[in-house]
Image (cartoon, rainbow, N blue to C red; front, side, top):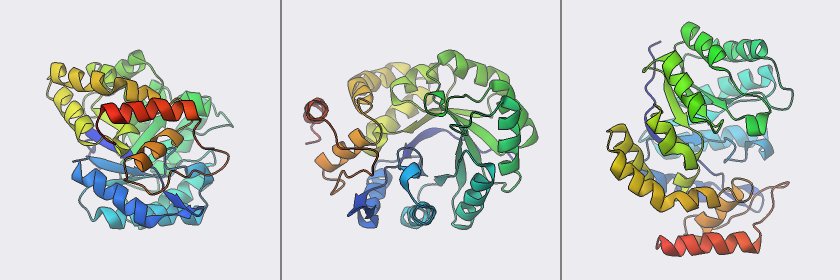
Length: 296
């Protein structure tokens, strides 16, 4: 399979809840907000989508609903990673049948496999699909990172393993990916606050939490950077920089869900335990920024 070109702004969708159940009406409103803002694609049930606290049935029903609600207007990628290889394979197969355009596979967490283990893990998943796979390296959550060497071996054998969501917090690591893997392999920022710095090193966009709310400006920022208009991109980046940091003052997606409710996009900012509601001081910070941006 030819390499798939990932380029642009992709939203790591929040999963709305009502009475502790997935709220598909609010999900529809959120997806419409994304499409109207010109988003490049949607990532369903990743960390921001609270995948750890969704049952398998909820996981798959949310993916299927996202595919249906997107109506083919934008591609949909499903988070199907796990620290169990067999579980990741099963989730990937079922998401494939649900009609997704590709998959986001986080590094196995908690059990901390070796790099050889990571190679075997991702290879086994790549064998069961020919749709594009985005690897996701986030050592702050997983305790390990995916090495450039493992990424290169995967890409050499499986051309549909063609993108890295880089959340290591390192421009140096992004530069290493770009230099080792070439221009056809895509690197996307996994950290809103580092999107523009990463793009100066060769990243082609972002899988964003902030774009759940602020869609059009982030699309314009990334497009400008991809067109080498870094002056325009910087203006947008600096305008929203404090917001990029503020939505991580408490565990994701608690702050962004609060903002979505304040903006009237979602009816509820409910999260599932063990996540809990925002502290009052964080609400004040976010409310101030939302007023500054004239969102509320």
